[in-house]
Every structure is written in structure tokens, then in C-alpha cells.
Image (tube, rainbow, N blue to C red; front, side, top):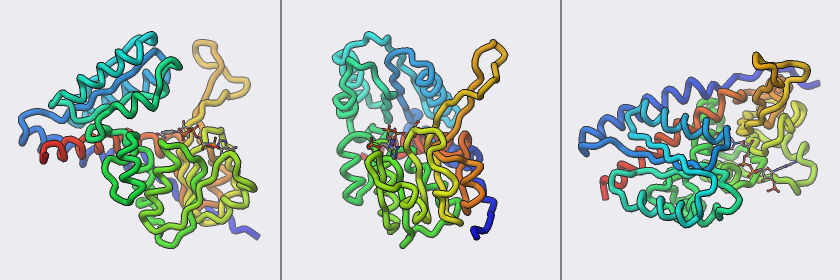
Length: 300
Ligand code: NDP
């Protein structure tokens, strides 16, 4: 019989406040030393409502810790050439330490070409192939924010990683692959699962550390979780609340992760909630990456 347990909740909202407070101190020291604040430029193309919220939040979070955040909102019909020209200007501007292009981009723009155009030293998302390659070679430079935040949550769980079986579900360049690299660097034995993986449930049940980055609401069920495992749920999915309307009379929605939280929390040793888990940590580490980029560029 499986012993019912109640998982420790890994509070990303609270931990993100700690990370942001640390960044604020460093941002003040940087500004005092250099005579200017660290600068983060966030570029949004088009008017996708979720992207508008994300980019505004990033700009606001930067300003709150003393980073000069600037949001560039470009119309959806912006050409690839115009976007590349803006990136060229930002790459060349010495007061700019970090550049982030919000994804997804409109279909007529080649996403990879755009990400490749950000100078690696200012690539605070860590998506440039140079930064991905450095991470894969065990020489991390600017590391993607969501995996960094997820690792900090694992540290909060005090999960022993060395020798642990880790399963990362999802192999995107943004989350799954860099997460696997970071776990490997901590000597976990890592398996990356994806849409072609056979018997995913059985694989997940072997995991001491289970990371879900799939984008499918509550796909990972409670009985896929090994009792006592640490579960990091990266997924952010908006789902309808059946039969409920909001104040404006529209269908009410809520955010859920890729893990069936209530079920999984009965078996896991520790688990991140959605919302309030990985999401706030991602923004906190974007600020941290901006300071890292600024400090490195200042050192030359
Ligand atoms: P992608 O769509 O790029 O990647 C999803 C991955 O999941 C792919 O590797 C895909 O496999 C795999 N997958 C899809 N269906 C299945 C399945 N049925 N079984 C096993 N694997 C499957 O997503 P991202 O990595 O960008 O994002 C993942 C989730 O994390 C999303 O919900 C996103 O919103 C969220 N996210 C949250 C962030 C945060 O701050 N908390 C930041 C970034 C993302 P294959 O490669 O074979 O297609």
C-alpha cells in the first residue's frame, strides 16, 4: 500500500522575493559604481494579450529592483529586417546590458534568426546557440531563466541531486534541454522524455526528481509520481472552469500546470504549485541574468 503523504509546497512567489531582494542590492551597487543603472530592453512584436502581460511584468519587475527596464512594443506587421535593425542598435548601445525578445513572434518572422541576432553577452534569456553550447559543454554563461529558477526551487526542497534519478518531460530549447543540462551538472542521472517516449507513466514513477515542461493541462497524474519525489511543474495552462462565468459574463478560466496537483501532492515529498511556483522564479532569474550580464560587461 502506498503511504499517503502531503507534499511540502515549494513557494516560488516567496522565494522569488528573496532572489529579487538580492538582485536589488547588486543593482544598486552596479549603478553606484558605473554611474548608470543596468539596462534591460524587452521587445514585443504584435499584440498577443498573454505576451503583453508578460512583457509589462518584466519591465515592471526590472524597474522595481533598480534596473532600467524598457519595453519596445512593435506592431504585428513589423518586418524581420526592422526587428533585426532594432536588435543591431540595442547590441551596439553600451547602456544596454540585457535584450529579450518575447516569444512567440508573428509567423512571417524567423524566430531562430532573431534569437541568433542578439549578441550572446546580452542574451539574458540564454537562448543564443553560443550560450546553449556553453551550457552543454559544462561552461555555463547566461543560462535560461526558467531552468535556473527551477533549480533554485529544487535547492529549497533540499533534494539530493547527486545520483538521483531525474526525469524531465519536455525537450524544448527553452526549458527541457537546459533543465536536463543543469540537473546533469549536479550529477543527477537524467532522462529527457517527449511526445514519442513510450510508457511515460512508468518512466515518471522512477523519478526522484520529476520536472514537467509539456504544456498539457494536468497530464501527469498523481499515480505517475514516485512517493517522496520532488515535482517541479513548469507548465502554465489556462483552462475553463466548467459552468462558471466571470464578472463580465465570460467563461471563467484558471491556470493549471502540467501536473494534476492535488493528486500529485498526496504522493510527492515536495511540489511546486501553479500559479506561484516556477512562474515568479522565471522573472526573478531574468533580473539576475541581467545583473550578471551587466557585471560581466563592466568587467570587460
Ligand atoms: P514546447 O511546446 O516547446 O515543448 C513541449 C515539450 O513537451 C516538447 O518537447 C514535446 O515533445 C513534449 N510533449 C508534448 N506532448 C507530450 C506528451 N503527450 N507526452 C510527452 N511529452 C510531450 O513548450 P515549452 O518547453 O516552451 O513550455 C512547456 C510548458 O511550460 C508550457 O506550458 C509553457 O507555457 C510553460 N512555460 C512556463 C514558463 C514559466 O515561467 N513557468 C516559462 C516557459 C514555459 P516533442 O518535442 O516530441 O514535440
